[in-house]
Image (cartoon, rainbow, N blue to C red; front, side, top):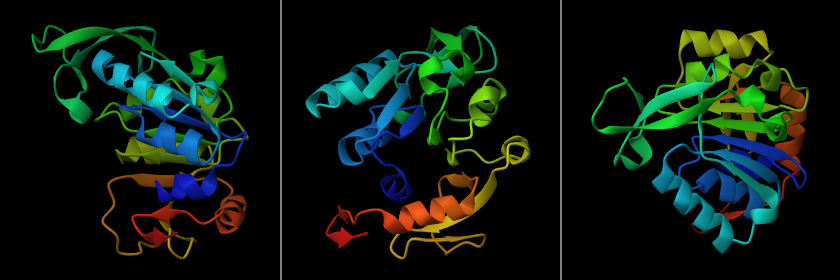
Length: 211
């Protein structure tokens, strides 16, 4: 989240895949004054996401799509009642509901993002299979993925992205870990441009610390 706060500027675009209730979307729009396109297939989470957008007064900067993203247009089964852990599951699962499935490349409003946040509980590879045009956009500087697999690394590498670590308090990028426990992997393209952005970003107050 600190990386997002330092990277995004007004006029930039975050594509939030697996937005849930909108933590990343709200930071991007309310704090950075960037635009956001949020994808959240769970109706309950999407309802709260829309409420959070309304409460924060960022509806003019935000577009919400209540669909799952994948490698084809159709439908998939999504688990129920698992909050942030809801995920695509096998057809016929009695603890699931059917939701629409689309490709990221189908959404013109998401065609030229500055950053993609990808958190879909194991379905990340399928999302990337349907996102080749978006991944090739020259405006895209960063992809943050919760899941890291050889397929994800190879796919993003084909578009010029490399895994990079970020130290938010010193605003440093590195090919080596800073020792933090990581729950997401950051992939960057044009490391120099990203480094210049994060250094120049205004300071933020987070839980009593200035970053």
